[in-house]
Image (cartoon, rainbow over all chains, first blue to last red; front, side, top):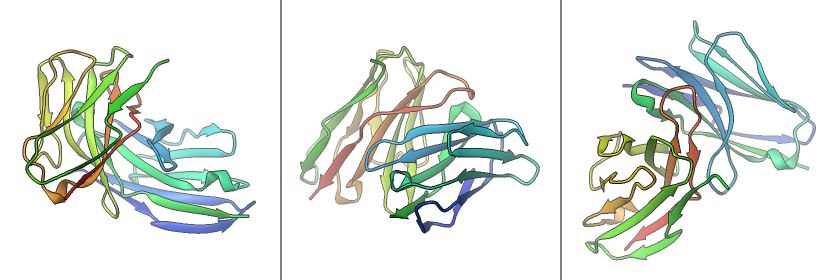
Length: 110
Length: 113
């Protein structure tokens, strides 16, 4: 059975801090690893990773995948209060099935 | 505007009263899926569909039914709701294949008393 584990489960930081969110996975037929941000509503897509070692960036957010060690990290630099959200990691296995981790709750204090 | 819509957004009902939550997408996506989200458990897949008339169970299908008669619609049916089905439900869709992200609907908060 596919399994995705995120850590830490929650995190409190101050504005301007840099945070690293972790996601490890075990999946039979790995296809891709996705990151979503959820702020009191539906998850919104951040990144899709399919290849090891290639960093994806969007503004202050970046993510990278390690297919050998079966994990991914999401980095947020110079955090802002608007980054407060639940960050979800999911892997895509066979039949496009998404298996989500439990999410990381990030709180950014002014 | 490309979107996934769900109705109703909020529903309070009683045990045993059949209900349907509708989901519709306007992006011509083949793949559609239902999830429930519960505190401490994250998002769990209920059912998914890879095309019209093709549906399959996800991780937590018990107590739910789905149908896919048209490409754009994927309703979730609770024949006899129970309190343990109180949850936040999301519908999602994507193009088929693993290179495409899933787009989520706004969610339906269901309370079964």
